[in-house]
Image (tube, rainbow, N blue to C red; front, side):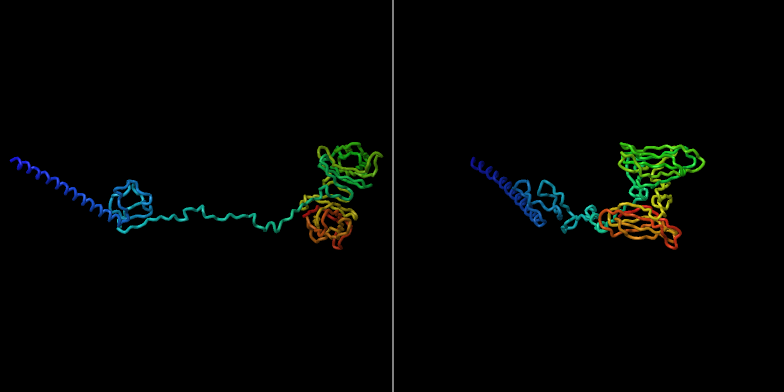
Length: 379
């Protein structure tokens, strides 16, 4: 009786265990089948098999390209980090989305060449010569024997001097003037001169002084203010024994509170008178009709232009360069022409002394012998 009771419970206990084992085995096989199906589908769609027994960190080489897209068949991803570049379009055919940036979005990289004007060779191939012009008031010009001297201590920064006997300068004084002042330079090489007013001797002055004195003023009270007066300074070519020269240097004159510089056109230097004219160079010019009167100056270079005037009353003059005759010019013209330039060229290199000598002659059609000196220009 005891054996039958013990054996029945043992057979009954093995049955549930076997059933449980068979159930677990079926479940495992079913899971394995699912994994095989999922893996196959993933393989067909370009996914690698999920690393079941490996580390959860994916290998760097397994990362798909950012520019590729594919059809997603499952929400499951092989990596815990989501891949932002994958999209699931509705179309079952995988497509690649590639974005190209057009060059027009970068206008600053057009590399337009910057012009370089310094590389243009036209200006250097044909340089423009520099021309210097002097009008007749400059101290560079000597009228007859009255030479110009530049000195910053003189009135007007210069003066005119002569040492030739009987050479003179003249000017007119206004009729209302009461007091006249003549300005001279005194120095160790100065001589004597006569001051003549209206043809009468007013004073003989001695301009010698052991040390230089600029702006020396000789004063003269005008007795008659009802008319104009003519004043002349005449060179005597006389001097003291201690003086080293006969020069007389004139620096201008004054009437009442006004001053007239020695370059003024009101002053006549021997045969060269002055005249104002707005069409002339600098607003005025010097002119002479006396045969033998001359203008002397020095230039540097191979050419220069004599600025003069042509017209119905002008005559002829000779041009000398370095004391050699160069040309005779005729300034006659049926019409008046101001600032007319006569070019003297083909000179040798270096400095040259130029003389323009009035001939006192004229063309048969001309009404006068005048020669105008208005200045020069040097290229």
